[in-house]
Image 1 (tube, rainbow, N blue to C red):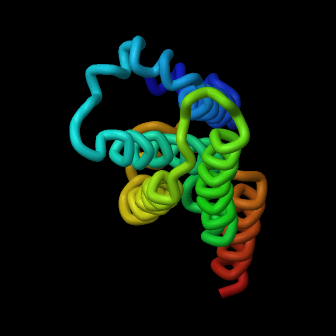
Image 2: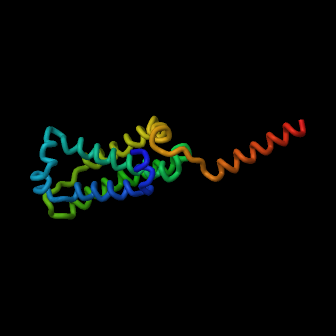
Length: 164
């Protein structure tokens, strides 16, 4: 599994997840009620679904960014920008539901659930996700500047021992 995850180019999961979320949020309500999603019906189930969709959507964004940068080189500002992008995608899909005549209703509570899901994914990734990815998923590889830094460091320590 680890080998397969490392072969797939960074960004692939984000593209697939974005298309899937947009499709699910913009499909006509009659299709939702007649699909496999119909089992997921209880009080406020749509809010839970929105939260989970945007949790996993942002998790894919943060995973792909970590894969691209290596988890110990991620930047909080970029992670926040990805999270805000995910939340804004929720606002955009709700606005599209308002404009489309597909039986879907605009709901500010859905937008809140979307944003909470996206930010929960950021929290999960910041607290323990990066560690899990470094340890169990990503191959241990060093960037060029690591090799250069370590190589330079070993040369200078060798010179110090020769001169000392």
